[in-house]
Amino acid sequence: MLWIKALHIVFIVSWFAGLFYLPRILINLAQETEPVATQRLLLMARKLYRFMLPLAIGTIVFGAWLWLGYGIGKGPGNGWLHAKLFLVILLIGYHHATGSMLKKFELGTNKRSHVWLRWFNEVPAILLLAIVILVVVKPF
Image (cartoon, rainbow, N blue to C red; front, side):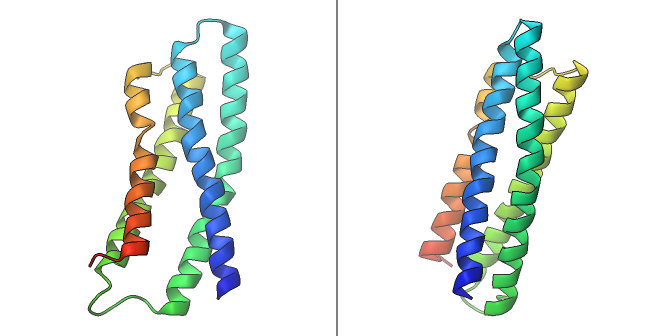
């Protein structure tokens, strides 16, 4: 089980690197006025998003493996796990939202400002903090 836990952590760290960086590219896209630079940023964002998908899948697969290996988490004292799983679902939604925003940038229909995107960029950091606290401290 320790190998599975190690792989889960590696996939989490790698996925989060993408979750932190892709919104930064979107911020730059919202500010960019040069077509050549815009095309370069779009290429970078597309490649990063495609790279992030297997990392997200690996995170979920190894996380589910751990969940099943250690027990489903029913009973008293496992509220932290249910809260963590809810936050992971929010992260998956965030991942999907970045892909939707990327498509809008590709189509030239983005309506989000760089200021809005800067706030949006903070979401994975807040979720990561909450998830780590839930896993380590297990407050309920």
